[in-house]
Image (cartoon, rainbow, N blue to C red):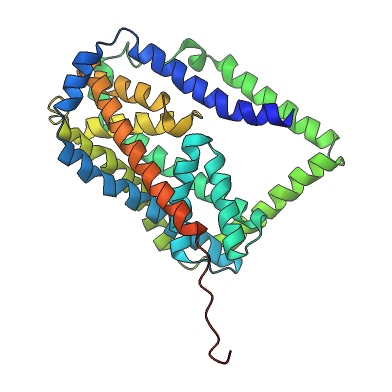
Length: 325
């Protein structure tokens, strides 16, 4: 059973990505697609790469701010290498990279794994907040586009139904009720203990002295991600003319697609990016060429940085030599 679970963790996200790609590329003229990709300015595409690795390095610096208040002082370089490695692991096992980076730092820096998971959760909770700000700005700066393309941006019927949200509240209430009735059982006690420990870590982190730096790093991460994509728009003739508001919309769509578990965003990211570009009049063929070229190049870069990070972490720690020996 355990082996089957591991196999499913690997195959299901990959299968999901492949199915999405199948429908995206179904009927595509690959000769025309290659001509569009070949005409891209590859120097500009290469210039976008440092923004991705820099954003992930800043994530490592922000992670350090979460760990220090807990009484530990991990090496800054190790945290950056772990974050880079995180993304390489995620290409093979979606979402596992997060636990991997906690495990490798826990082992290398002698920090309890439970504490590392707590900092990871706080780290990841900050991202939706910043992304919501980007989403708000993207919506506010693209209202005219939404009004012109009402049908393209119409929400599915179930999302506008109050019964959908009422059902969600009922399911949540039922789950909480079950937890209350079975609160003395061992599994529920473990869950409660975990959240109590997490809350204590939250309070400790809340006392950090460098809150301003934490906010600066948080915006720096997402600004880096945005520039990672923004620069690539100048590499293609059919996207170089688009406004920064258009780039922001496409960026937010791609970022939201990463919620879907897949290997490095394979499938969902391309679908969201193609949708975003077509909203601005880019043809399906051109949008597919952009999404293909950028995804491949950025994925290879993230994987390369990740492998480098894993290699650096695998080296034995340098232990100072005692002169008296």
